[in-house]
Image 1 (cartoon, one colour):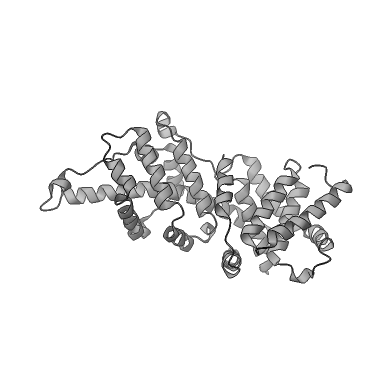
Image 2 (cartoon, one colour):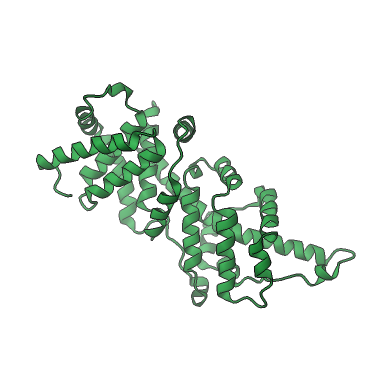
Length: 346
């Protein structure tokens, strides 16, 4: 597995940093959030498969079973990140409560130490999250902690407590559930979402989180908005997959991309005859190969959807001109295949 990990690191750093490419994250994240019925949706699956296929060609010891394991492991780590972000809100509350108790018990406490504002530690939304059945079950089965990042958590808490968001919240007498929830929605969006220091910390902790952070955080924001006081501990959180069909989609896409390599490479080469085939960006080749696998294999996915999704991936993960190039090549292949009755969908 270590070889695969090294190759995925190579993917992330070579493509996103050496080429200096930045994904159009706001548009992509908004798209993911709108269709989010599960944490691992098909947008994330497509990216993961592209990563694994990229690594497949960099790896001398090709093993399909290992590629499957790596794909599932990476998707599981993405789901873990969803819970890690939820846990961060709980941890910030715990640290704040510890500070309050420490000040209360010091030798000469001040009036403020003895009578602190308790809105944050009595926040009804956080208490509901802590007691959430699905949340507790996940943490029991896959333990995780912010203990190793205590300094980051303390510094983040300081920023939150100094903010206008908190100062306004602290002025509310006996906040309602909705006010408690809105405080955390604003806090998460302002101090956790797109936090460069947090991004770097997560990237160092798990290489699978390099490209997932902002997408996962958008799903956390969606989950916060969906919380309802009436649901109590039974409040639904996002499942890993929407259903077994999405899990099978990920494996089938991986298998077909690898096993039908010759077919897809031949089509690509035919429609890039005016180009120096050896000079086409390797990432472009990988993206087109995975895209063709989806187009030819999954009859239920409209061709236009597949084209749009992989063009967006190309814009974020390959060269600045890759989106236009890939669009032209894939469109030509699709039109020819329709004319030859090799594709029966639109």
